[in-house]
Length: 473
Image (cartoon, rainbow, N blue to C red; front, side, top):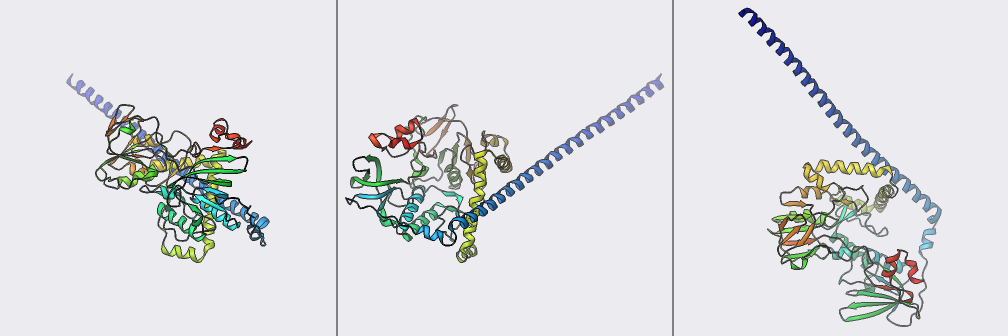
């Protein structure tokens, strides 16, 4: 009996051993297959991203090639054999005026558009014009915006006048001070400054039917002043009047310091302070990384909607590169044209929903996943709409800044501002010492009251339709 029991025990043990060995083999096989599939998935993902990169570069190269070819054909058909010079030497004969405060043209603003218009009028032989500037210096938005990290998101060789290339840009993407200096240089070189009336804010435009003139009412340091002009050119730009939230209660109760990014307060001391930045637009993505490096205790970033962010390929321009561009200007012109046509490919993709837009979106998502490893943070900053539906932001500092220990991203919308804190709609309260409003500009309406024939208001016309021509009928 004992021998039979031992025999049965041995048989059972062997069976269990064989079964365990089979199960181990099955588990190992399953793990191996799973690992192979995971590796294949990664390989296919990498190949997919590489393919997208190649497609993007090929489309960009094709766009540059087609654009340069078309530009050459246009020059050959229209501007070759001295025809460009002959066409640009045309002059405008000014009409005689009755009063000293009457001008042929009045330009509102002295930023890129205003100075460019002045240069063009000088070339046309038209000296009877003025530029009205509300600030005490020229430059428009590049004078007004002085927040930390302020820079352009367009390459310097493209963000400049085609007739006035600057070989001395310090970076691929110009900083605020250098762009402002460039505008000052252009105003002096082309004799624009004598036409500018500083500290002159336009408060109303009114068409005078009996005189066929525009009446321009302004507010100066000496009081109200009126000018008259045959032509008004609005070079105010859409990014000129700061916009503040209208759905947040208690802003006026805040006892700390606050300012808008477009009206930066240099007197604010950020050291060891708790700072709230409201908004995640083009100004915020430059301000937040700079604030995070200013020894602040905490930066609370209040986000309503996350933006699409493209990495900015930027670096300092070496002195050798500057000399080459100065000695051989045609190189800088060629670079400018390549930059222009490469961006035209992106515009066409947004406008006509071409495949390049979806390819670029996948590449941008890949960059986000590589830069942000935290799954929870990644969920907060992935947009819910297609690339191009809103302004695409260009920076390489935004994602690293959000992952700093002294920066916190808050996606709950603000309900109210208290004396020393901000409260969200979910009831969370954040103590803050300083509030930075990075809430954009009033781009949805024209900033100056305009009255046409029969006193009809432009605002009234635009409330019904965007077809401005009806204002003057």
